[in-house]
Every structure is written in structure tokens, then in C-alpha cells.
Image 1 (cartoon, rainbow, N blue to C red):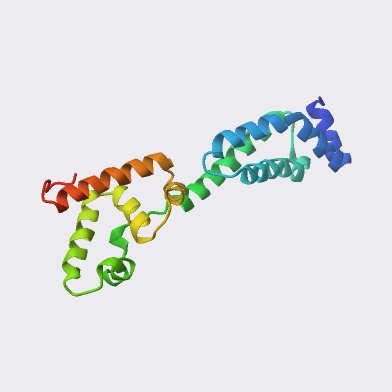
Image 2 (image 1 turned 60 degrees about the vertical axis):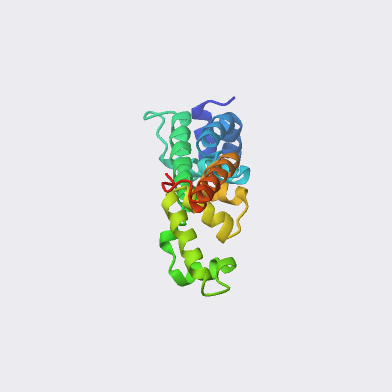
Length: 191
């Protein structure tokens, strides 16, 4: 295992050798930090790319490193945390985009709910179903919309909403039971 001074010297004289030495010394640390921050929402490839970016950051800025201000380990840990947090925020924002029934125009819902739009008398039924789904509130209404209007499988819903697949299935099942009770007139309050 090389010392920080040796790594910096190699990075300044033989950049590729210095990078290799730094990665041999600190790969476990950097990978562990990145993995712990983003493993729940990112793929293995995303984690590996983030780790590479961390080492590249130090490689690119090796001339600016002052070991009197801190160690390479501290610098890498800081960069790894920051990059992982940035990726987490980016992915979380993408995956947590909410699809709400409120976001759709009536015409879009008509199109999506083709099972209910065959005849004029079905409009009342369709409107009632939509209102009852809305009354469930979030996240249940979003799950039902995704499952039955967009025909998304539970795994896709899980990834999009950041909720476990079995939780999605349980919530949808409970929401359908609530809707059935309301539909049959057994419970006017779905919440």
C-alpha cells in the first residue's frame, strides 16, 4: 500500500501509474461510500461509473492536492459522498415523478379508460370510478392509475415510485377492496 506522498508524486510524474496505485489503495473505501448512498436506486453500472468519476476527479486535480490540508483518503471520501448524493438526487427526482389523476384532462382519462367509454350511459359509471380513485388519495390513486390505466406491472410501478413491489401489490389489493365496498354501497368513506 502506497503512502499519500507516493501517490501524489506518481500522479504528477506518471499519471497512469499514480491512478492505478490510488485505485489499488482506496477502491474499497470509495466503492463502499458510493454503494451505501445509491445502491437502492441505481444499477451496479451506475455505481461503478460514479466510483470511476470520483477517481477521475482526483486524477484531474492532482496538481491542486495539498496534503497539508488533508489526506487523499479524506479527499476521496468527500468527493465520493458528494458525487453519490448528486446521483441520488438526480435518480430520485426522475423515479419519483408522480402521476396523479388530477394531472389528466377528462379527455385523456376517457382515452385511457377505454373499458368504460363504449356508450353514453357508461360515462356516469366512469366518472364515479374516477372520483372514487381520486378519493383514495396518494399514493394509492397513483398506483391504481399506473396499474389499470397505464397497465404498468408492479415492478415498473415500484421502480417509478420507490416503493417495494410487495408493498405496491398489498396497497393495490387494499385499495380495490375499499373501492368494492364503496361501489357496493357498504362504505361511503374510502379513507
